Length: 104
Image 1 (cartoon, rainbow, N blue to C red):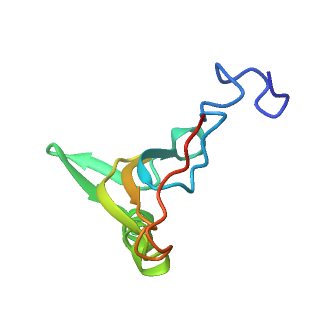
Image 2: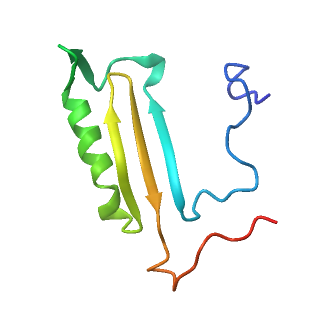
């Protein structure tokens, strides 16, 4: 177990050891605020109301394809203390048709 997390998490990493996360594919990501603080806003009447920080997070998340044209945002939701997203990496048009390498 990593000393960095001092046993807080179940494993050292949930990442697949033989996978390069820069390869083409769709990836579900989540990031959380420290101590699960409600930095991004609050839910009122079953609807998320973004705070100023939440508005910034929303704008920056949506800028990802502008900075990385081979990444598409397939889904994104901001909650009070975390963000979920599905990003698809497709470098094939930029890399001469390259696809994921064989893992064997």
